[in-house]
Length: 294
Image 1: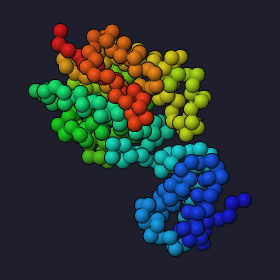
Image 2: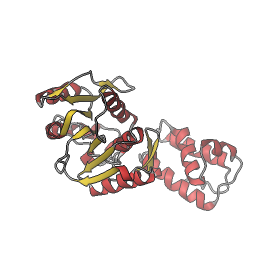
Image 3: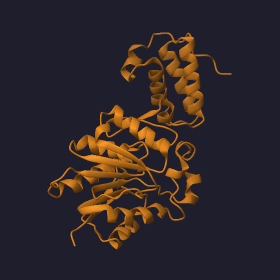
């Protein structure tokens, strides 16, 4: 049975948790221990160091033990805390949403580049985020584009509640609307920018994913069908019809999928102005197509 952390110093508790996490084959053992102690004590990482000699109370010990047990079972830190930073924005999570990942920031970067490559429209910029989840992509874009208005869709009402709460918390609710539908099925007005991070994992590969993804991210947001492209076959034609002239579609893609997505885009009449944008690992992660005037 694990020794209680109650009565130990913060530093002692940190060492104890770190050792347990290392024994549990958690690569980020020391950082995870600091983060969880900080979450329980209401301290940032610097505060944890400054409070090294403070004693852990029984109540704090109980919460830390719960966190440690769940972390050792594979639950991600972001799920334990209930929030994750994306594009510098703090976002609430729920079981219905993916944990936003740094790779997805590539979509935001490419979208902004594509918008800045042409003169701005003579109307308020309209954005659609298809399959929004936590709202990460849309809210990041709205934070960068103060005059834009965005509509986010998701088939999950629970995910939309989370995205809406994030919009409120970030002061962006007046410039965002949330619609429950399958992909873009309920949208009709033209958009200057459409973005999406759809499910793109091949069905047979889901079992091989890291447990933090496989066991805790919503399956529906991962499974892209036999070849991983099911969502794009629906989404790309829908988006092409909804784009305004010179409007842009930007999507996240999986490894070795960019060429297939580019073919889908060109088949719907979208122009590929630049190669897929790579993420920090060098993977072609974001693909963009522009609708040109006839």
